[in-house]
Image 1 (cartoon, rainbow, N blue to C red):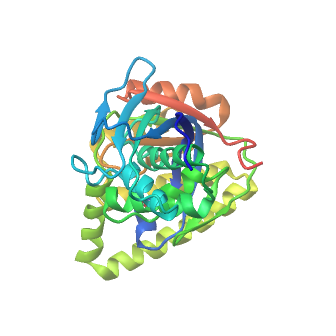
Image 2 (spheres, rainbow, N blue to C red):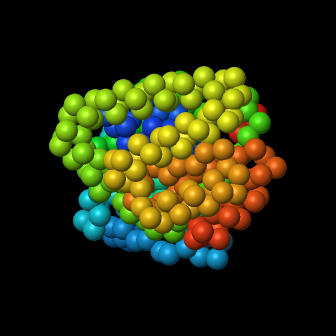
Image 3 (cartoon, helix red, strand yellow):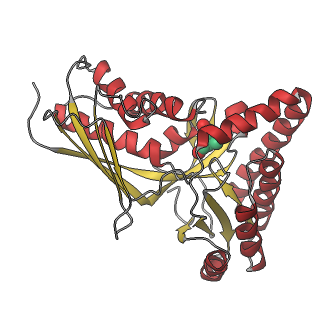
Length: 323
Ligand code: MEV
C-alpha cells in the first residue's frame, strides 16, 4: 500500500583521491564522501504531469533543479537517476507505477563530484520512504550503478560506492571497504567551471588502452602500485609522500589525454601556492581539480586556484574523516 504524501531522500557528493579512469580497467581507487555537497529528492505518486525530464540552471543558492517521471524516458533515455529509480521500483514489484521525482542538487553536474550518482541515490531513497520499502546498501548500489552505466557508458562503480559511503573507501572491481586513516591535512576542491561528460572521457581513455595494450598494462600496473603506496601514506599520515603521488597520478591522467590546459593552470597555481600535490578528480576534460595541503596553507591554495580560473572552491578536512 503506498502513501500519497511527498517523501524526501538525500545523498552527498564524492571526490576520487586516486584511481579515476584506471579503475575502469581494474586498478583500485581511493574515494571520499563530500558531505558539504548534497542533493535532496522528493517523490510523489505520478500526478499525470507527463514531465519526462526537466533541468533548471542553478539558482542563487547554487542549486540545480531536476524533475522527471518514472516510466518516461522519452527525452533523456540515459538519465541515470530515472534508470536507478526504475530499477528500485522493479525490485519492489512496482515497475508499472508512475512517480514524479523532484531534486534540488547542490552538486555541480559533470564536474566529477558525483552529481549523477548522488541524485540517483537520493531519488531511490525518497521512493523507499514514500513506499515504505526496504532499501539496503545492496539495492541502492545496484540501482545507482545501473543508472551510472547508462549515463557513462562503462562505469566502474566507484562513484556509486563513494556516494553511499560513510567515510573514505578503498574500491576495486565493484566492492568497497572502509579505508581508516587519521590525517591532519586539507583537500581543496576547485571547479574549473566546464562540464565535459564522463562518457566521452571514459571512451577516450578506452581508445588509448585499445591502441597499445602492452603500454596500457604497464601503465595500469604502475597506477596500482602508486595507489597501494598512497593507501599506506594515508594510514601513516605521510602527507608529503601522498601529495607527490597525487601529482604523479596527474601525470598519468595527462598521458591518458583527460587533462586540459585549464586544469593544468589550476594545478600549477595550487602547487605554486604550497600544495603538497594536485590533480584533476573525476572524469577530467574539465571539471574539478583537487589539491592536498597542510591545513594552514588551504586558504592560500584555494585563493591561488580561484585566481587561476576556478569558479568555486571547497575545503575538506581529512582529519577525523574516517572515524
Ligand atoms: C568518474 O567519476 C570516475 C571514472 O573513473 C569513471 C568510473 O570509474 O566509472 C572516470
